[in-house]
Image (cartoon, rainbow, N blue to C red):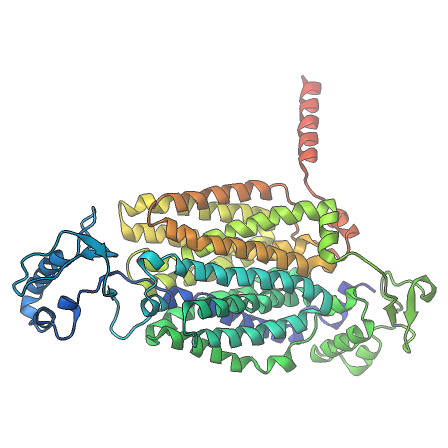
Length: 576
């Protein structure tokens, strides 16, 4: 019997699968608020040089400005600006310089200061809510140290990249469940420890390990969910599972609004991992992985458990495997040794290439691998380029972050209802193009209306969220079971490279407001063009082996496109 037939017998989407998918959905919620917590923990507020004569608590000028009545508020703002002009030079745009001040002291009547301009001598004054802190304000990561926050974000994403690559390989080798549980535990531990970091260096190290463990459970949860249901439910279940990320993403502005200390944000979110301790007893191994690895004893036990949970009687469960051997199962003298159960075999160990080597050696999987990895990369650059920049779009950073998260929900809903009618391939092309074009319009609309530019950025976020969701499903379906988790892991690794690049696009926007969005547009168009040459996978069985690739979903190569064009020309010539 094939795996699909056995799954259909025990119930392809019964009570057991529904509860398991719900648990996996909940497990992806923390990924959202843990990954995006850096949006607020690493916020760089408006700032200028700290001036003791104005900002010191014992300053007469400071006292005069801050004890004024409401009726003279406008006057005091003007008075403060006049005094700041004595200490802080203005840039060409009329705003106060963030990193320099006039050198010299001021007389008691605030007349003038030396015209020599120097870097800030006494630290910085931050325009931020009273009592609120970020690691930028605590460690003064501005001006000459302004490159450190994007470096920290990139280190985190590099950690995720390393973790994703290791997860893909190890999950295919040792199983989905061990990697899922290990990633979940380590993720919460390292994020909590981030809140105890005494310096940027220690914080960066902790962020690396947080990233390395963060998306292990996220990617493995998706694979677990897609492998325990049949073909007709893969789209909805895969989308719902990764949709938990958006729910967690929506929670972080709420958490950051009420928790004003950036360290407590990390400690509080890290402690939330206690709620997931029951997962050690709730999450099973993937039955498809057990079947593929020919661990039939464990497979039979798990399928019997699923059958019981889905309402099968004891007699039905007992007769479940009475039809004979599993499909493709050779006799004992063909390389398999029987166990005490005459219908169950374990494979004799043979030397074989690692799964990632086989993926590169095979021409079909190699073409698909590099193609889909570029799409993952482009999606990540656009996704995190928007997500990490919500505080700089204008308006309330909390509202912007919430809307950027909320638009992902309708994106996922549309994906669920569109994939059957439109297909994976067409939906990837359409959504990433919408995202790229919207991002390309943002800097130009900003000159007309800030709210309009924010709205267009949210359209871009909607498109890339839908594209990211489909790519997860598409990537898992493009590759056979033996390398499926490896392919998703490497795809996620490509996305982390894009995520590591995204903070520098935000940093680049300080000098060129148009170029970052132009890069996003170019990446989206290129990805759409490359996706044209991938096959459609919708409503087709998941390939188990390399041989299934051509049988289920033959590739559309450059040579085939050329041949199709040649045949079309021949037909036209024949008609003429």
